Figure 1 (cartoon, one colour):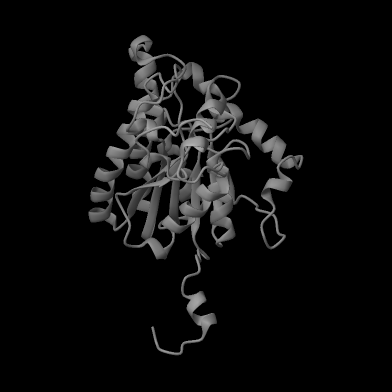
Figure 2 (cartoon, helix red, strand yellow):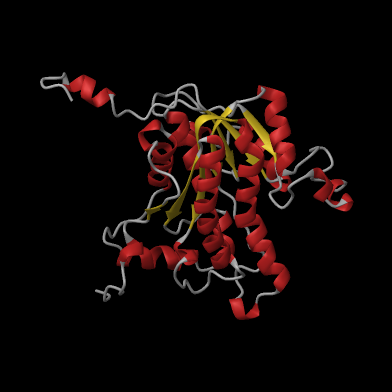
Length: 309
């Protein structure tokens, strides 16, 4: 840094600026989760936002958007409103259209959606924007149909469903979207500490899925980095009471326990996760890949619970 450089210039060098970047956030169906908070943070930094949403809730989401139900949540710091560039259907259980069972494809919630597979999402992206049209991909997808069951009671089908939707879908998205990313592009997935440590109540194979997700992210970072020059990272966020997380059943107990026992004994906010995601997607993080970044008020560092007051 040049001695005597104006303070304004010094500040400007560290702005998170995603102007001209296009982001795809997969797994947003309302305004309560980390995916929505990340989309908003990316937009605050200047990116345009596309969403990929699970077909059974896509119609409800679009209807609520049209009726202004999310207008307050969509308000940006400059007073403008976040407008999504595209909202596409995607079911992360399917890699290609051929994988979608005919009875599902013909069901009420799928029949008007076309190809809902991950490959179908890539095709829509290319049809709308052409080659080399994407800079940021966020995987905010997780589903475990037996999440409330202990691992000892989890079926093979439930376990594999959790891993397929919550983990392998990330690898599938990197496979199919990586070739269409611009140089310096970034992939990001969301994990949870249960992939490393025991969290009672987070069952059904979901802990295994998060462990696989973090391991896969390292391998994908190497392969996508060497093949396309792309970065792949993971945020391990503290527990958050999104609408989807209510399926766990004990989510509020998890939140309260982490708040009391963290180095920073405060409630985590979705905006804090969004801010870190924007940083990791930006040129400021160009040297960071194959990393799991904890956004949990430091809870991951604790080896012993704090005695109750």
